[in-house]
Amino acid sequence: MLQFLRRKQKTMRSRAGLAIFFLLASAFAQAPDSSSSKEEELRLAEQSRVEALVNSDVPRLEKLLGDDLTYTHSTGIKESKAEFLHRIQSGELKYDSMQHEDGVSVHLYGDAGVLTGSSRVKVRAQSQTLNLHIRFTEVWVKRTGTWQLVAWQATKIADE
Image (cartoon, rainbow, N blue to C red; front, side, top):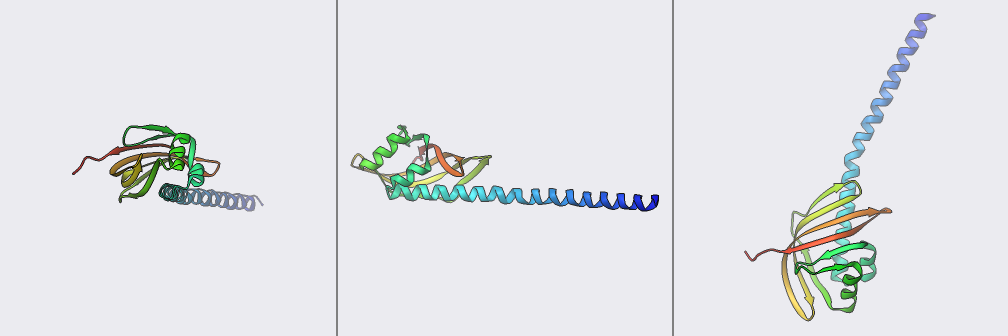
């Protein structure tokens, strides 16, 4: 009888060990997928933001931009979300095109993400058309399941 109980305990420990092993393996297997899906979500949010800029789609931008947005243009002008959207809605600022170049990088920090890269932008500001080559840094935060841009900083790339 004692031998039977020992075998039963050994079997239960083995099963418990296997269960823990599979739980840990499952958790580690899901971690990269979770990170890559967050990165994909963020890239899609950025793509949506660029499309909304080019189409002057203020309602879509309203959702994609955080209320605490700081938008710093390559000219050094800094605007709040309200100021930026007002200029787009009024037509004072019109993005004709924005093409990110290859190599936009995404770094995730929990529910925050930083995008860096370069872009070619054609924009009309106060009746003047500008063709810009810029480097940018963006900070996004995931709030209630939605990515929102909270900071944009652009710098002109010197003519090569």
